[in-house]
Length: 188
Length: 188
DNA sequence: CAGGCATACTCAAAAAGTTGAGTATCAGAT
DNA sequence: ATCTGATACTCAACTTTTTGAGTATGCCTG
Image (tube, rainbow over all chains, first blue to last red; front, side, top):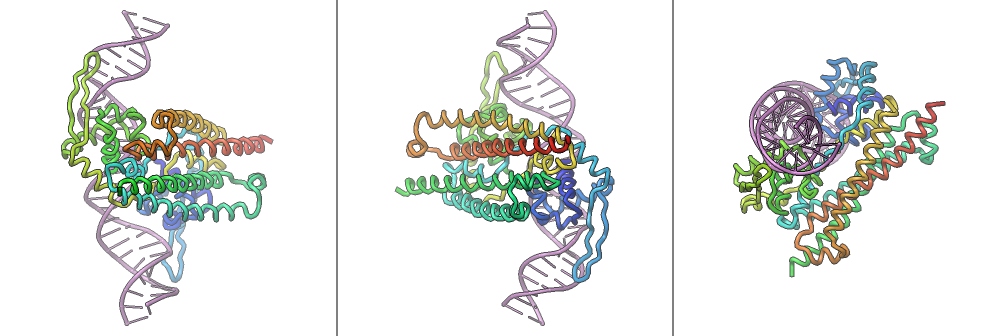
């Protein structure tokens, strides 16, 4: 039910195929609701069956045909209704944190590596967010941007994703240094 | 499968009942893997059946008996194996962000309210994190703390939760001011 | 002395999400 | 000339999570 709304929200940016959505689609859906391709295709099918989106087939040469989905008026209305409802709180669920919680009874090196992997991932993602941000701002300040554009939603969600990754980086750096000290102490 | 490990990791802090876990249990499980009480009871049952935890019934007067679960050696070993595996990346799934993404075609006031609610929630949660942190540090600096205690996992996960809520606060404050400007502009 | 909240659970259906295995075509690299 | 990787999907089994409805006792407040 929530993926449904994430897809509708993303289609506000324009028509997209299942494949587009499954590859970040300009980093859109993935910023607030990650899903596997299978889920996206299935949900798009369901949305089309309910008349919330329409599909048109685009024939391409040199690559498979694709179905581009776009919002219908009913879809827009469904999205509006969704925004009018209160949001439930986010469930934090992070496998890395489970491992970190268990580090004292676990494999210190492996956890260290997992944190380092996350750090690297977060840095790459932050760079992508920064590129997306630069593209949106196009040389303007934030205030100028907000004054000039129609849609503020995509920028706000981008900023949340960006600060999330920034925090991941700060935390992971600190955690690594603490884990390293602990490893040194164990080695004695 | 991941909830399983979250429970095992939490039980490192000592025995707990399903009810304890379902009420934050010193904010433990909830910091990295939120679950409903039903899920926790079911998972504890499954863990007991697999011999990863053992239950002992504690008879209480003036309140219902409870079953306290603690880790077995097999459970400890399962947890260790889990920490040795690489962690998969976290799926970001936040209903509030879906609403914010859709705000331009949605109900601006309702979204504003949803962001304000999140801000309030994040502030309350930050205060709880700060209390937990003060309790753990007990007047020591972080470095002193790390030198003195056996377990660093719980502090590290607490810090991640804390910085997550801090970022929620910063973002929500900024988002509110932008949404307000937008509302003023619409009102013209 | 009634009503609500806290403790402490259980059962089960339905919805949502994950995992694994395919299909088919074309571009570019080895 | 073959192999990898990108595009663009589909089907199905399985696991996980959510939602809703209960049970039972005792404490505290108005």
